[in-house]
Length: 58
Image (cartoon, rainbow, N blue to C red):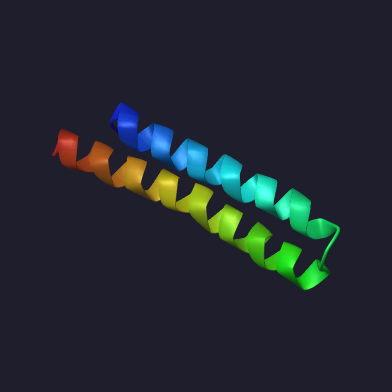
């Protein structure tokens, strides 16, 4: 994965984690939604990394 793309996924995930932490005090369902989005964002980063590695090898 290129460094700018890795930085994007890292910063986006940290942003979502921060929003999740802030939303805990406001609404539990909203916090659960942002937690789910955070997990999806981290998973998408791993998927993109694996696909780019396979494309580079093959």
